[in-house]
Image (cartoon, rainbow, N blue to C red):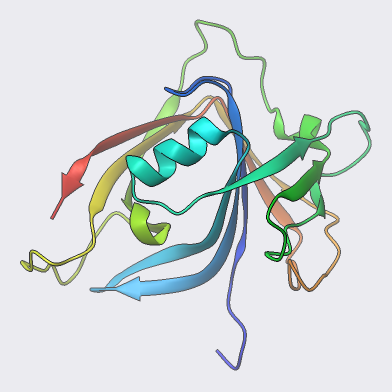
Length: 191
């Protein structure tokens, strides 16, 4: 609207995955709509291992970029903020998120329970997450792939962030959501 959109950043640290531990950073570019559903489009996906790049591209059809992603937690007083955002111009970006210790909400053990099971729809080829309903379903076989996700977590917290404005990040609203011990369950493609 008037040259502006609502975007954001998603930073994830996978302790376990089919390709081992890795970090992920997604630049969320815009709020979008499709067939009556509202979603968030991710303009760029960065991952910290070559194996994660391969899985994103070969299995999910998601274009991913290999990057040096660093989550710093040394400064316990630092709020969660991006101190080195990707420019999109370098072959190998270095991305730095400070205050990572503030992303840990709970002590996770092997018997820590997860809650939620929140349904979300996902179109991996265009890096978009959608609200879990479609007002105007389509029967076209040529539609983009759509998967159902179920998200569960042990804890979540809404907090203020001291993110400064930049060309890469835009004008931040200064609110962050941290979610701990996330489980992402992905279904097969659904029309």
